[in-house]
Amino acid sequence: KQEVTQIPAALSVPEGENLVLNCSFTDSAIYNLQWFRQDPGKGLTSLLLIQSSQREQTSGRLNASLDKSSGRSTLYIAASQPGDSATYLCAVEYGRDDKIIFGKGTRLHILP
Amino acid sequence: EAQVTQNPRYLITVTGKKLTVTCSQNMNHEYMSWYRQDPGLGLRQIYYSMNVEVTDKGDVPEGYKVSRKEKRNFPLILESPSPNQTSLYFCAILGLGNEQFFGPGTRLTVL
Image (tube, rainbow over all chains, first blue to last red; front, side):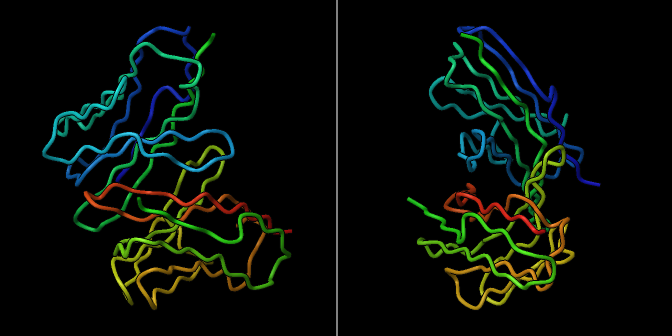
């Protein structure tokens, strides 16, 4: 069964620290992987999309990596700020059946 | 920029009363999908559509119907809503490069 797991479920870190969020998937035959943030009561905002042929993508203080062979992706956030507090979700798209599966998210709290 | 709209944004209804949540997009994208989001369960795909008149079941299709008569609209239909369908619903599209864009969400309560 295709599953996407995000650990930890919640994380608190002091402002200014660099941090890494993890996403793992059981079926490595992915088409792409996308990271989102979701603020409480709001919709999802796309952060980074990594195609299966890519190893990483960068946007500002965010860097996402992809290792298909080990079934893992990481989202690196540099110099964290209180405004980064949100839930971060990863989603895997499988090309063979066009299904998209989400992890349950990591709830991040940046302490001022 | 891709835009996805959903209506209504909030809805309270009673068991068994048919309802429709609309979803429309402004960019003529082919792939559209519906998700529900529940505490502890995350986002789960209900149905998706690759193109007009093409729809497929996601992970949790029971109790839902969809239609895709035209490219821009993808309504979610609950023929006989039940309390376990109380949830936050999101419509999404796949834009250029297969990046997903989400609508603002519809919070549904079934009494």
